[in-house]
Length: 351
Image 1: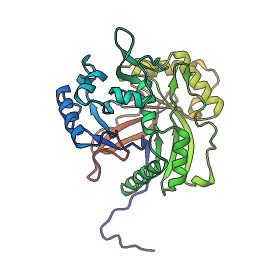
Image 2 (image 1 turned 180 degrees about the vertical axis):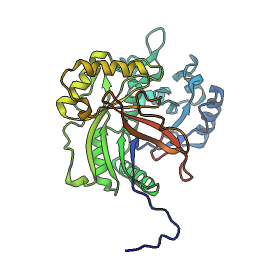
Image 3 (image 1 turned 120 degrees about the vertical axis):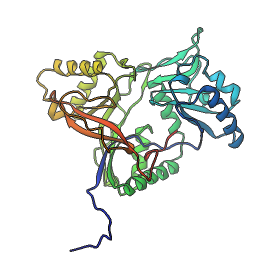
Image 4 (image 1 turned 180 degrees about the horizontal axis):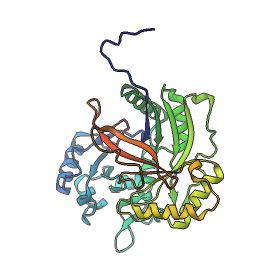
């Protein structure tokens, strides 16, 4: 059979090896950039508060200069946007700043203890100031996205799938902040023509990691014919390279993965973290790690013999991953930007 494409290009379906789609509550996105000063953020908040209903979240992305400013606290946000739920994400995605109304909505008290793998900035008296880092931030983000209705979650997933398919993406490996049970439910009900690998991304609390989230779901189910449950992701360090978990906990992650026969996906930012991981893997004698396909995900230069895969024309709208094998037996995935004429911000809903 011959088909006249009328000048169109046909390519194989693209597998997007790292997406972070999650639904988002109704939000007013601030007109700020990571380069904005806190004065600029304040002006944007005043304007947004005037232009949006009182129940609407005010969200935006800030850079390091705002994040590290000791004057930027929940109290400071309250002064410029009284009573409003404000959530400012760091450009790295590893930290958030919340207003008092946002802290209340997300069930963060002034004396909420630090979770394993994360922390809250605290005043001299020990009270939470409004800044949350690593798993303290992501636990709060999970509550934020969990506030959507089931219908909103399904609609968001359908929009995500439609955008992906328009770009030639036919399968995705998605890590969602939506608690896993609700995410799996939205995949079943959305019934989209997109192959979705649902990767677990559990939270933590003061007592430890949630090691059971999503473990009761079968890999395949006839109600989600195009999608599978596979893999568990943990974020091992901060952008500065500070470990989120003790090395003994990293060893436990590896052991949990072996016991469940489930691929382990690990976000890493620093070479020392990679070295600690390899040490933990080598200490578990007799394991054929290549067959287990432990995957490291990073924005940094990839060690080993993988070469440079992030240069040239590869500039993608959403974060894309290319997977290769390192000689030590771990799978590396790293992300690069490709700006599409159709998208400037990727497929996912962003706060």
